[in-house]
Amino acid sequence: MKGNKSMYEKFMQLAIEEAKKGASYTNPNPIVGAVIVKDDRVISAGYHKEFGGLHAERNAINNCNDSANGATMFVTLEPCCHHGKTPPCTQAIVESNIRTVVIGSLDPNPIVQGKGVAMLKANGINVVTGVLEKECIDLNTVFFHFIKTKLPYIVMKYAMTADGKIATYKGYSKWISNDKSRQNVALTRHRYSSIMVGVNTVIHDNPSLTSRIPNAKNPIRIICDTHLRTPLDCNIVKTAKDIPTIIATSGTDLKKHKPYINNGCEIIVTGKKDSKIDLVDLMKILGQRNIDSILLEGGSTLNFSALNDGVVNKIEAYIAPKIFGGINAITPVGGVGIVNPENATMLGTPKIKTFDNDIFIEWEVINNVYRNR
Image 1 (tube, rainbow, N blue to C red):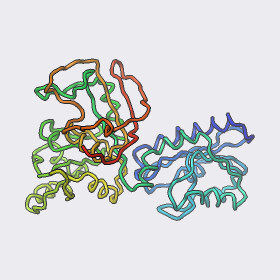
Image 2 (image 1 turned 90 degrees about the horizontal axis):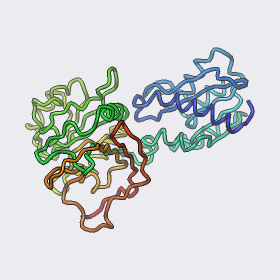
Image 3 (image 1 turned 180 degrees about the vertical axis):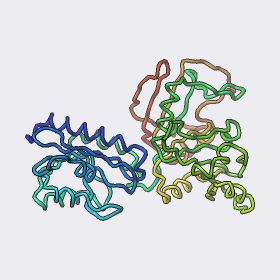
Image 4 (image 1 turned 45 degrees about the vertical axis):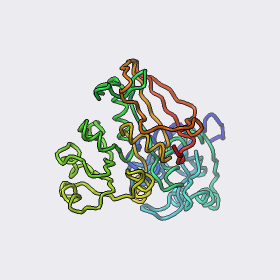
């Protein structure tokens, strides 16, 4: 096909839409989409469906009804060139006689980075890179972070009133946000590998922390519980044999661990900092277990600890058109706070949308490093 920029972007956008179909099912691998175009028409498409399954390029090639000989493939991420859980995609592309490969973003994984492009070129295939690059990178924010740091990407989510309260002074919080906002939260829970709360949230709210979407994947549930106070009869523990559940604690008494283990929970023992779980230590452990992302739905104390320890990467806030008031009403971030304004957590340019009358704001954290109070 002709190397027309607008045509390239049109077909890459189709590949991006394919990639989105795999969201939440491929962790800790990236989501990737591919389309194959011949004579300016799409003859096949495919996406990476699940971790350990065939990659987008091979699925697109396998889905071809017409010959791919001389065709152009559009793929959102650089094709792999190594043997992992599946054979290299570059091999399949070469064998299919595809003439040109248009790539959205290069793969930051050191075992692939640039090597996939080099392999294709070495086999006489034309390669074009950087088409809708930002959009393709944005598809895999979690993967890019995890492959570079080996730490989970953490999204802090909360709903608050217009005066910045997440509960009344009596602790009541249902419901601050509206139905459409809560539906979006359900989609977010489906998207990330795990969801994390503090033990006080479990004690006060007795949540289930499921995705609430029929046939959707539930996130791994993580409870931060320094002294193992999680009630054995809470919804999370009662369903731990069906939904992976981790309790992170600094307690080393194996007798206290046993009832939770018997109910299907996994116990992770971390170091302690400021009389609480060392969140930096916990993130390293979770990263070693290939947990690449966490939706933090903690209370105000855990939220402050996470921000203060520099482990939060993104903030998602739902703001409802309500006023609670009350000097003792709870705010999203509690703890002791900071002393000096220069130690504030700084956020990037906001992305704003609405769900009926609720305002939804996303910020990237731009200085997520440990800060002294």
